[in-house]
Image (cartoon, rainbow, N blue to C red):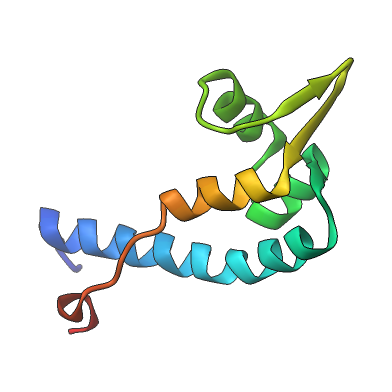
Length: 96
């Protein structure tokens, strides 16, 4: 059985999140270049987040969105910028 200390666990989580975002950003970038707005379904597909998770992020003010009647839209440019704000910068120490 492997035992992790706090730093190991933190590094592991950071690396997994960085990999997930690194994989998702090209997909998001392609869509951003082709569409001005994303639907809830499109954003859920691109990020891998559930619709409930998107709703939570909207309601808590974390995720920028537009609501027209019952339709929820996300301005692709704003979503990309929002995702980039959460990007983890790799350092030379991370590669060890």
